[in-house]
Image (tube, rainbow, N blue to C red):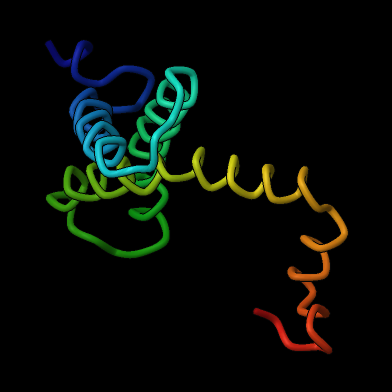
Length: 112
């Protein structure tokens, strides 16, 4: 049973909690297509599997918070896809205006 719970160094429970967190995040996100939802769900699970281990490496946290971090990283990782799509759509519609906004050069040097 140990091999089932621990696959390639990742615990199965972190993937399940990441899936639950990403699914919860999708329910509160703006409308998306099925492909975007699948990509967001996948991004949430990947962030949930890799994020807690990275946080444990950087900070000295007790192992008990690993599952809570997986849920939180699942929710946060899900928002990567809608965020990237929003940035891409803004860039595709007005590339120079988007770059000016990024630099803060729009409206006489003040960003919106």
